[in-house]
Image (cartoon, rainbow, N blue to C red; front, side, top):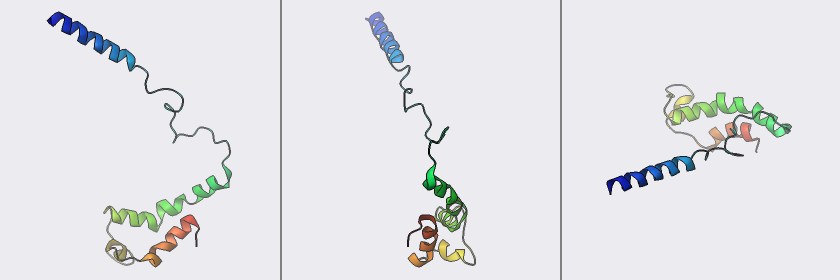
Length: 103
């Protein structure tokens, strides 16, 4: 009985290992979507997105995000209102208008 149980478990382990040998490869699975090697047609939209990255990552929106997750604190001048969540749409909308260009 014990010998047959070991044989069945060994066979199940061998089949399971052989069946899962290559399940993370194939078209669309083993390619990194963030590592673009060739851009066929960049177009004006792609160029505009790149141009606006500085507004998103280095401007007031980045400072607000850092204050909301408490990485930094707005303790004086214009940042104290943001730190205390004392905002209305007229104070934050211009920063989003600069990113999305809507008015």
